Image 1 (spheres, rainbow, N blue to C red):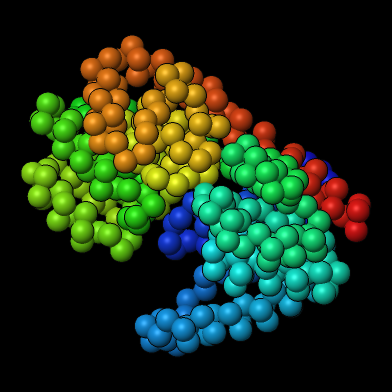
Image 2 (spheres, rainbow, N blue to C red):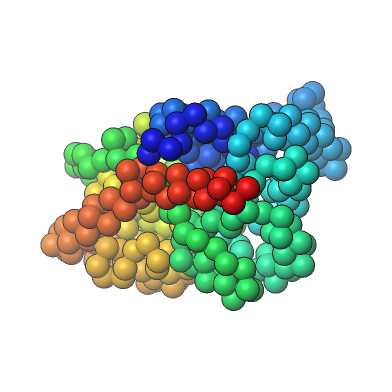
Length: 359
């Protein structure tokens, strides 16, 4: 990718912590572009509140974050060749993505909107007019999955696909733990439905008492989920590991037997891609973009959302049938090669080059 060398890219998006999927992709893309000798200027959308006490004032804290953000955007737009905006649904779009597009246009900088929200259907139903108004100013709309491409296409908005990136040097197969372990690597928020994962696990644990569950994530539901685990009688078998850094997450994935994705809304979950890269068979709900990245019975087992019985049955199949688990593992390891930087990087290079030529 010689053509990105020397290119000045403004990258707008969240950064860890917290280690959510979009934040991890923002940081990883910045690192990879810099590795290709591009000059990357990061404009974080989640900088810490200053002063810190303002975080407890919901309305006021938005102003304290938004004003410095807008100033940073204006300054960055004067020093770059192209702006790359990591965009999400809801207030994240209105407060961060849309201003980045408008300011880029005011400063005559081409802008790529990289939309990643799993709740796109509901968001566009509510906010289509404002999204269209902003997208008229953008040079390109890029999404990570065929799911989002179809969602925008139904609204008459053309999008091209550039998928997420997985670091196969970090996320790779390894030695499993002797005790079977189910890992859930989603934040503890309602849309990820960790509660149904616990209910499914309780059913599995009743039949296979040795099995353990690891929940890697943080969020507002932690206390409720801990209480639910105790209520279900599996409190001692569930580890709430909290937020894990990339290397620790990779290590905990490698030791796991099954990776479980219980979410009710999803686009292209990094947790699923990272599990595939580590050779861990996946059980996931068949929501959003998930069926676009894994195929039921070939590279993963897909179940309906909110269905603890089906989820538990799929987990039991993988625990009881090593031939099935190996078949899914091998297919996943093959498929995940499409998400390496070697495969994805040239697409970003082509996007940037095209918008610069047009500008």
